[in-house]
Length: 135
Image (tube, rainbow, N blue to C red):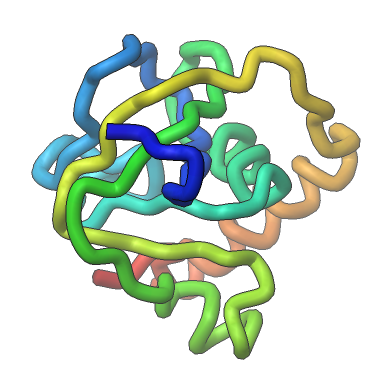
């Protein structure tokens, strides 16, 4: 249940979800090999959520949901340990579901050339056998 002092997080995706839906592990990931996700990801910053929506695989439209964690969360080691020590992106993961409590419908996408550069960098890592998300 939302309270005035509970932290709401963002989840960027191309999945079509409704209020009250749960985002859970075990569903095919929006990234990498599209394997069944061992973790689900959220962030406390809109910028990181925008990246999540922009980099998600699939043809559905990009969405940013407000989500509430239903259990413990931990720093996302894919970013915090490897790219951004100290977790400035406020990116987290969990094995516990996130409940969709809203949607951000107006947000500013990154410039197309910046998104294309990020996608190219991820493609290069994939060619080198490095997955963007390691569980």
